[in-house]
Structures are given as C-alpha cells and as structure tokens.
Image (cartoon, rainbow, N blue to C red; front, top):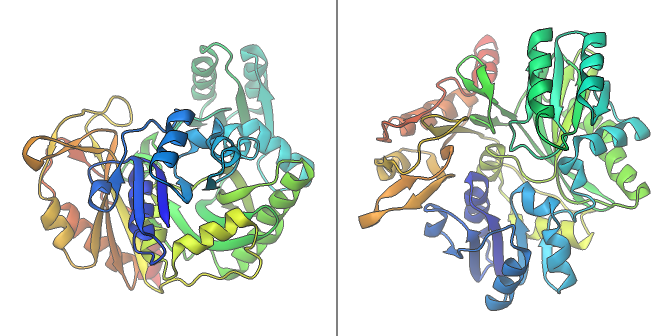
Length: 423
C-alpha cells in the first residue's frame, strides 16, 4: 500500500515510525513532515490546510490510505474532501471533528447524553461571561471555544485571573468561550479507536501541560508524557468506556454525525469518579509517542478497520513495559520560540539504550545540520520495566543533546514514580 501521513510534529514522526514498520506499506509519504520524518518517509512540501493540494498529492503519489495527524485539517474538512474524491482516510469528517473544534459542541453533547463532565456556560458576549465568573467565583476554568493548539485553557485560581483571561479572550472579534467549574483530581489521557458504531480501548497516558517543573508556569501543548498511567486501573477504564466513550459514540450517531477515528479523552479522576475534561479527535502529542513505543501490533490494520467500520472484533496487543517522552522546547516557548538554532548530539542521544528521538519542530540546515523550527522541537523517549527506568533512559539521552537554546522539564513522570517508590 501507498500511505500518506498528514502533519509535521512529534506525533506524526511517531506515526510514521510505527506505520513504516508495517509489512503492508510499500511507500510512505508525509506532508509536510520534518527533518526526523525524512529518515523514514518521503517528504512532500504540501500545506495540510490546502485541501486541493493534498488531493493532488494523493493523485500524484497513487495513495491508497491517508492518516491525518493534526486537528486543524480535520476541523476544516480534509477527510470529507479526500473521501469525496475516492481516497480512504483515517480520521473524523468535519461534522464529527466538532468534538474538538468546538468545546461548546462537546459540552452540549455531554449535557444532552448524560456524559459526566464539569458544569459549564457558553458565551459569545464578554459581559455575560464576566457575570457568570462573578456568580461562580474562583477557581474556575476559562476556555476558548475553538482550536488553540493546547494553549486555549486558563485554570484561574483567583477571580482576577479569571476576569483577565475572559477579557483577553473576548478582545478577539467573534470570540466564543466555555467557562466551567474547576474539577479537582488527577488528569489522565485515554484513547479509543472508533469506527462509527464500535469503540476499541487503546491505552492510557499522562501528559504534563505546564511549562515548568512541579507543574508551574503557563499551559503548553505538552512538555512530556508517559504510558501507562497506572492510576487508571482496568476498573476505571471499563467505567470510562461505559459512561463516557460509548455514550459519546452513540450520541454522535443520534446527532447524525457518527464518529470515526481516534477519541482522545482528557479525563479528571475526581472523588466522584472520572469526568471528561475535553475531547480531542486525534492522537495526543506527546502521548502518541509513548503509545507507539508500547504497541506490539501492526497499527495500520487497526486504523483501516476504524475507517471501514469493522472494529467490533478487533484486538491490539501492548508491551508490558513503560514508555516516557521528554519534550525539548525552544527558548521562549510557549510564547515566541527562538527558531533556526542548531541542534547537535542527536546520534549520541539515539544511541543510548532503549531510547528513540522523535522530531517535532525541526528542519534540515546546511551540511546536514538539524535546526529548530518550532516551539516543541524534540521528543526524547525512553522505555523500561517501570516509569522510573523509562525516565532514567530518556533523560540520559536528553543529556547527550547539545542545544544551548533548548530546554525541558526534568520531572516528567514524577507522580507515577512517587507511587512506584511508595509501593
């Protein structure tokens, strides 16, 4: 088969790495890709948001199956466009991608079908939003309704913070917001493949959203992750499938927008049980990197079964070992990252035992150099029998990277390691 992966981040490098190992794949193309993906796939300099250009690429490369990595092409209807022209795709169509594209749509679906989530209000008027904030007090969560690359959420611990977040949001013309109650607990990322009617549980992970050690500083797209999240027990997984994932699948059918693709449920484990924070309609980044490292089975048949509606009797096998990903980001991230700086030591990092370096925001420079070309630039991953072992291997590789303008958190996996030490 000729396969096209859409995207250019660490998630897409991990997907290309996994899919490229499939015996079903003859040719692997990635658009637009990055310097790391170039080692495992043919790169095509095509904008994923240019629907006609992607369609032409599919024709030129005789593509049999398309895997869409990031959310933005899904939300604007890339899958609809390609499928209408005869190209099979993994990922939701435009209507179903509203689950991520509009937080208001997602919250309304939860309210209608009894899916446990935080109490909320939807607003298109700043004054009404401020009145809601005043009424409910802090802590409170202010969210931009649309896509915000993982950074459109402010967890305001004071009324002043909440009002400032609301004012900043509504300073943009046509802004819409979801404001919801603050939920206390531990966050977990959980993934399930969906074929329109059936859902196949994948695995759990835990992301680290804040930019600094100890979960300090502003939210980011994710500074690291590990899998599995052992706090997410088999009993909790079953509860989430029964109370959150399957009611969502059935609700989307009832709404006339059946969902195909991967449901990424951001969960809060509260004292009242697991509740849905938000849905993403694609693999998480950096969670995807840890999932691909743990997956034993061939990924491609599972993605094809999701698209074809035949997941009912499908199964996937997972390695018992843990995986951990440390994101190395460019100086200035998550505000204005410094681009164009030279990264050295990548071969030495990759040579460390049980490690792999996924590229996220890189580009090739002169004489084979690798240059930073984004905010989150590398995903340095380690595997091991425990989270602590995986963490040690990942940071050993991080320490081989020579990049003065880069930084990372030094505590990825800290909650799980504390639990491992206690046990």
